[in-house]
Length: 165
Image 1 (spheres, one colour):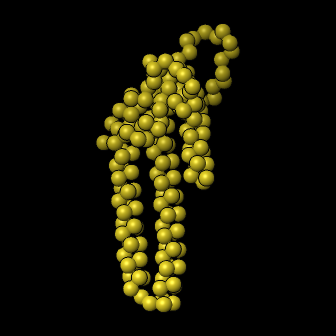
Image 2 (cartoon, rainbow, N blue to C red):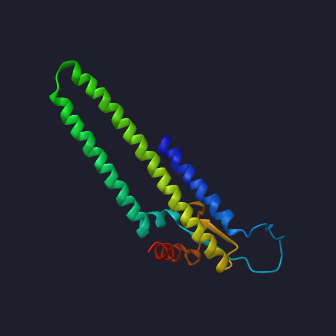
């Protein structure tokens, strides 16, 4: 339940940030029929999170950290099983607390890493929107249907990966 709420929060934050970042500072919406073409783009932030080299690098480091913690817990578990009686009960309780603490820390770290990467992506989207004079850029998750020609995900992905080299 908490994981679902966190995904929803991250999704809503990314949609809101994309919309806000694409608007020029202090700009008010133009009245209907105002001069100038409307240019709309769409980006798939989830695809960038999945496919960008930096995200994959961060995820790999994160998975290594998980494996280290799992190995430490497994070693502690093996050690606890060698003990007898009350000592085992005490060690098993301690092990459970250790496991819960490690899981909580890893979840917090994953959220922190995801927020950092999304922030970096949003900065690139904002700069791209300004340089290419987009009126609005929407997250694909907020769009029911759209022409594929407005999808700028691959361009943003390339810019993001180029920046992280």
